[in-house]
Image (cartoon, rainbow, N blue to C red; front, side, top):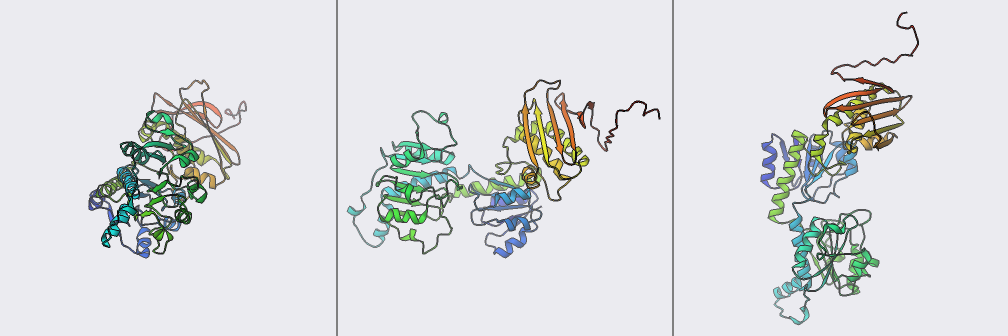
Length: 465
């Protein structure tokens, strides 16, 4: 198997791939033409932030199975296109945490104490302390937007400055924090009260241009904002305007809507701003960590189909998934049988589960097996649901607590030119049985090889004829 690495990673990461028997194509400075040419024949593709994997790249990479992002942000990968193609997209969300948190705090200090301007003036032979009077972080209010791992590490460090912490994250609950750690507030309250605002959210339709001029005007005139998350969360032209008219007191920016930042960008000449060239993950420790981690993840998936930090698979507990293997195998069996019996375009699928908690993996296993017989492209857990929607199939998945004669039951119905119904159960935790065949209750032990289903009309005397 072949792996393309089109951005710089450490030698220790490359060694992990090679020691796994994978053929590595290392092109950190390759041209677009070289990268596209090599990508057509690879099974894995590892990148950092420098490479953009677009839909046409994915469509042209016939053998591609996995894209690994050494780092957190994946806005340089067309995930919907990868999902349609059945390509796993994975990242390394935890490795950069400390590096990004420390850089955030470093920018807060640089901004507060005018360190870059002081350094620049000293190099020019100027000694003017009075125009560079800064402010302390002590007793100031910090507003953290995004309380994931990085946001929490920033919180820990800023509490040591005796800062009051306000937090906003619609996907996090208060009970995950100690009462004295921070105060949960809504977004407007945070923006209006904070002396410093730090951003730790992904770029989405909701967060893109979240801080436009209107939002910046809600900040205190003395407030400062720091972005080490993703470019585009702060509208750059609106930020320049807010700095020039002193709507806010300062900004520190590490990420940009377009990278590298254009040398003519208005940000470069804006007042009271500190700019760094996307250094949030640029420590030797973080670079080594993401290189080793992503290479291990890609190797493990290509060689053993072990998944870690997969972004486009709708479940994360792979230990639980292994425990469910008998049930998943039964769902695949039901899908395979019905795929061979159904005729015409499938209109709808209904899947009911009884006595089974995790129904998403079951529905995907059934879909994957059912569609494999009909769709020429690779079908797997990643794209099964997407392909079903593209085929116009209406999918209904239900969980029931109704008491039955079985401890567990998967009941499936596929509607096309006719309706095909099957049901199966797992006995003693591992033995699959068909308990409903074409709508008839029975008890059949599936056999390896060919199974023949014959449906007759119930007419007396037929056997004797």
